[in-house]
Length: 98
Image 1: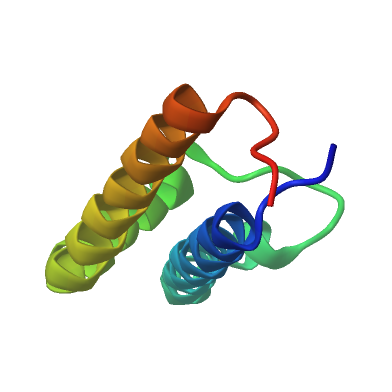
Image 2: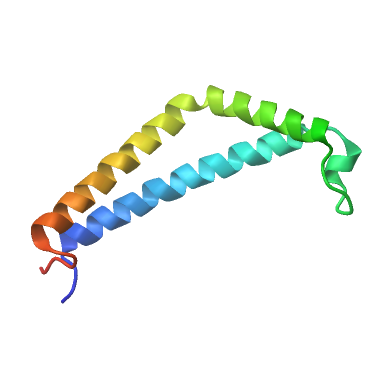
């Protein structure tokens, strides 16, 4: 049995939103990492100091706060899509037929 076109569209739309959310979160982590000014934080031979980690966490929290509407909207959309997929599977079985 193959999946129905509607099921495939739902999965595709969900994957696009999931990728966008993941990309946004990765971008924010990268931006937060760039704010850490310590030389020890950017050397490959040593780990971050506690103060570097704290600075990174604070920067990440500030960036997440400034993008909270975008992140919240994407998470809500992803939740709605997951619910729709679960409902479709419940109605039509695990692999809906065309």
